Image (cartoon, rainbow, N blue to C red; front, side):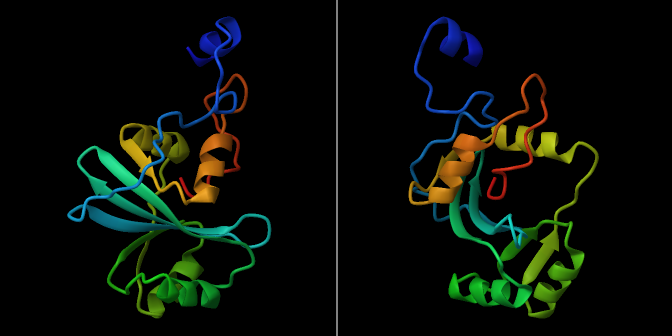
Length: 167
């Protein structure tokens, strides 16, 4: 439908061809009684370390970029968690590809857990996010950039492994 609308009908598109997410809304008024968790994606040289705050209530989620930086050590991340006001009781769901990093942050007293990844976990994760109405903080510049640039490989249902640190 997006191809037809853009290429055949000639309608303007704000998103790149093959955008993974097309339904995010850029307004941010999360409910005070929603469930809050933090997502943490480890990076270092090329990819950033990214932290996102997620508030969930029913079939809606509100997301806010909290951190997006390269060259962060685990010590830097632990310090950043405190500076960002993330308490040691807050639930943090982290990239399970870095069990040593998760353990170091846990030993610093944080309530951090590795994400459980099964077969085809990227596709399942995308489908899960697409099942929610998503509201993004408009001040989350890197989140907006990733939303606009996270795309599928042409002719496939497999996304490029880029622009996917906050989502």
